[in-house]
Image 1: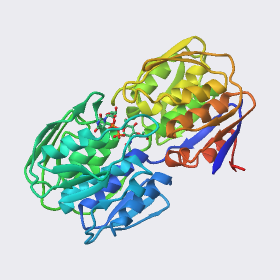
Image 2: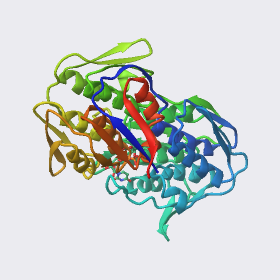
Image 3: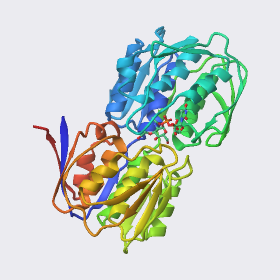
Image 4: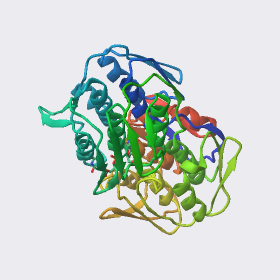
Length: 421
Ligand code: EPZ
């Protein structure tokens, strides 16, 4: 297993290219199962999650391969419809093959994805959406077993205790595009990744109204064709590099980053004192004055993303005054607090809120990455800490950040990957 070794205290500056969005690519790759024809997805990051998705497709006897930032899928005549435990358990997002299989094969068996380190991750909304289309679903031997032979368009309100759901919206949408009749999804997730999936489905010939809104209206078609699509840039990766500029008092230009995907985050940071400006084909984040403490609540899009909560905590940890961060999507997503504490951060957890008292300095330490975004938070903390930080178990990072040590290295960070002894 690898670890990252960071010598902190360097100011980062220069240009970084933002990769394609992992969370847009995953459901889009699943959507290629809706046709027999060849599809090409471009701007795909080289990440472990993409390799897992390719493996899942191959498990259905579908030809799929990644070459650079392009994934080509040739599903012609595939018949299998079971996604087994050993594949699904390595990546929760594998659940997004459920909708396409059901629409195309009229049946699906997908291992129940279970919870994960960021807290319980139920799939009741996925089931609610598919049942609204008439699918018969049961859970047996740890599998979601779905029969879609009698599906027809339906009307569903897809909201739960924590609001809309990204992948439940994706699954219901992908099931509806090939299902006879009109389907209406109310309270659909409107994250840019869902809008990008809608764009891909429309290129395949799907009839969808309401792209990027909370109400999607889908008129089922008989057949879809293959499509060629370039994924949107990764707003969470972009946000993480913006924070790298903030914590190191640096000046980073982010090629491909889109302000319209980052409004909540940019608003809070600019209010705090960071300069974020649009430049041709990207954004520039520049430390210009002492930052003020922040008050952040995670919410569904266009609110502040839960996938940036951990990284923000690292910035708050070194920002003078008291900052508050409230997690409303995954109230247990706070494992990173203990690790940041090892580096000298002063953070108190009070229910779903973390109260962060900014300290003058963090001190490098051995820390353990617990999940993808928590790992990124520890890297940010390592960049600003005095001395050496070893971030262990970085296989999580490799699921979601393409060549992070190379990108940070080019910006001036002293960072290297080492094999654990
Ligand atoms: C997506 O997961 C992302 N993953 C997550 O990113 C992200 O944290 C999350 O959306 C929220 O933005 C992918 O896109 C592959 P949800 P998803 O269903 O769709 C509750 C990362 O680090 N809920 O939108 O699985 C759920 O518990 C990952 O890149 C139900 O109650 O998340 C949560 O509180 C981690 N019932 C809320 O909804 C359900 O059936 C939103 O989750 C489904 C979800």
